[in-house]
Image 1 (cartoon, rainbow, N blue to C red):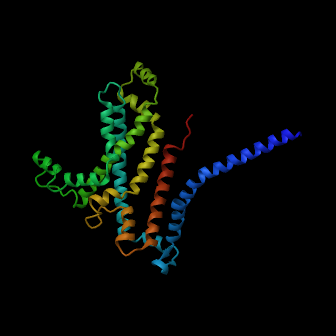
Image 2: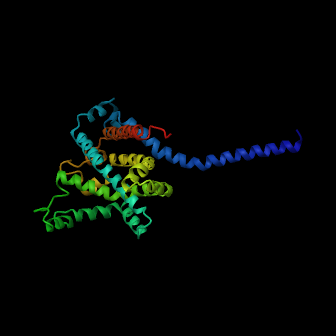
Image 3: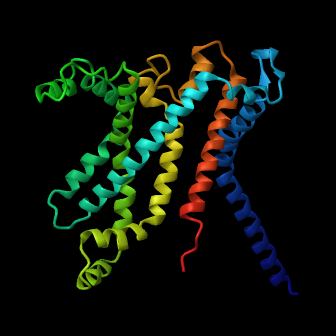
Length: 304
């Protein structure tokens, strides 16, 4: 090997090493931040879930915190409430999101951009602002009660925010109003990628609007339906903001969710970080199980 060739090889090797170093420097800081602020707290919380006590008096308690979950009435109430919100709200929200997407994908519809922005806007609205708005609308003397009484639907005001049943209804309405537009964007994006010739061919074959929706639109939206249902279920199981801002979990923990219970265990009641960590990992387990079921039911079969 000549001297010139040797120098060229050394130059290429040093350039390759330099590129590798630059690559690690580029991703290193981000990786470090993720490890410090994501993985380390997750591992710490898992270790904490097997401990009891406070501060320097923490001691190992095995599975005691997890056994306590099975007999804790407040936790069981929070699980029941959270799954009620999930079972009722998520299907309604996804149906509305898909319906709005189909309607707003019609090229003949005027002012489509305005309607898209109007429906999407709630999910970027300040939580405090919309919580104040909902409290005003659903108060005993609020706009909703006034309208219902004017139309003679009800004789006396409904206690939307202080009644156990109506408090749940108010929370379901709030989260549906806030997140329907967010999911609509995913469906709308997917619809715009469907070849219009497919619908034209179906029309030639005599398919009506309903047949086209169930035979073409819904099957082609299957990946988006799976994605939005997984993210919606995950978000609902971690529901916190609306409950705290609208009903504070009341009356008497009637509307409390699992995430709010974690907050109460850490900052409202006598701090019990070990048990709060156990509750958080119970939520994680529920999310993993439900996600696995969804993949099995809707995403397990490969397309031919």
